[in-house]
Image (cartoon, rainbow, N blue to C red; front, side, top):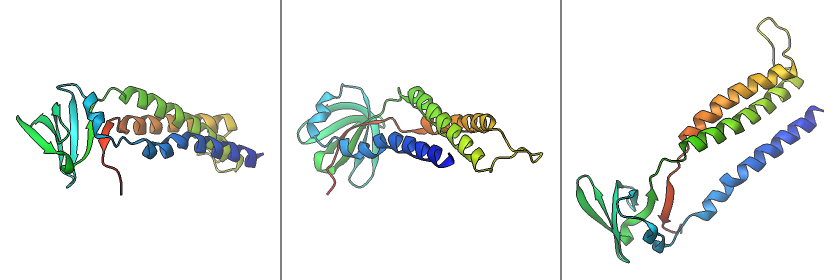
Length: 164
């Protein structure tokens, strides 16, 4: 029976990992995507030399992007741009909730599987019941998942140079 539960847990982890594996395949590589930016939206431009410039979007042309940064207008030529990100932070709560839910589920599964393998004990030496193991795992997973979810970068990449 523990083998079947372990397989279910492994399938769950794989299914939850699919969006992470698919993310690199959906990166925007079209300079025209920058035309969707609105004036004064907060952006971050990463130059080819890895220098990061954050500021308020001003304008874009076929040759360059302009933003208000460090109290002055800055224009970066297209060949010097590695990526442009929209720096909104409106998904932190969502990411925290998703992280907490996933963490609680995985933690509960690990707590239950750990019980069946005889690895969970109370301080007095008695074995923890499966429900107790699941509860402990769920609480630890919930806290860990919430922290990780809150730290997930939610900046949207508008443009990125194609990898070579």
